[in-house]
Each structure stands twice: as C-alpha cells, then as structure tokens.
Length: 135
Image 1 (spheres, rainbow, N blue to C red):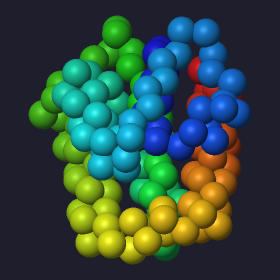
Image 2: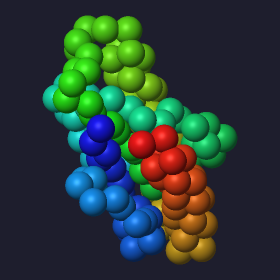
Image 3: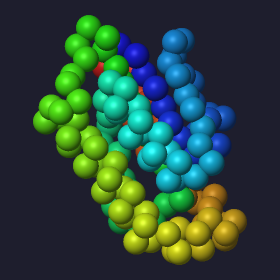
C-alpha cells in the first residue's frame, strides 16, 4: 500500500513525519491541490480520508489531501468509489469557487491565515496518524 499527500500547507510539511516510501507534493494554492488530486485519481490513486471532513463549516485557504494506492487492487476508473471520490473533489472545487473572495481575504489576513494553517495541520496530522495505524 502506497501513501501520497498533496498539500498547500507549509506548516504540515514542516511537522509531518512521513513514512519511508510515502510521497508528498506541495501546491501553490487550494485549487492546485484539488486539480492535482483529480489527476492522481485518474492515475489509480484513491482518497484515503474524506477530503471534506473538517472543512465544511468555514472557508480555509489550506488543504491537505491523503491518497493511497494498492498496485494489487487497482480499482476501475468508472467504479462507484472512483465516482464518489471525483464528486468529493468537485464539491471542494465548487465550495472554493463560491467562497474564493472570502478565502482570499482570510489568506491576506496573517492572523486568520495562520489560524487556518493550524486547523488544516491539526486535521492532517491526526489523519496521518490514523492512516499509519491502519497500514
């Protein structure tokens, strides 16, 4: 089982203890994270954690997404899980489009930006711990 992380949160990158062989990619923006995740889903990766978990309430300019791949069990790209995963990423993209001005304002305010980075980092570190316990 392979683990891959796509994030635009530099505080997560600094603190995460990634296991050997795991991949991590940084993106410049939330939309870049989501676009990259769509491409990875098309390449056979699967969402390891619900990407909307913890992000429904308020706009957050940072997002960390965990994906997994098992070469022995590659799922078809037209399967039920794949469609749910693509829909989840599309829902995040739509949420970002609706809130992009508010997200930009939060990113411009250093106090809010740091608070959002801390929230994403906390969610991501807990998610990473849970995933590693399952592997």
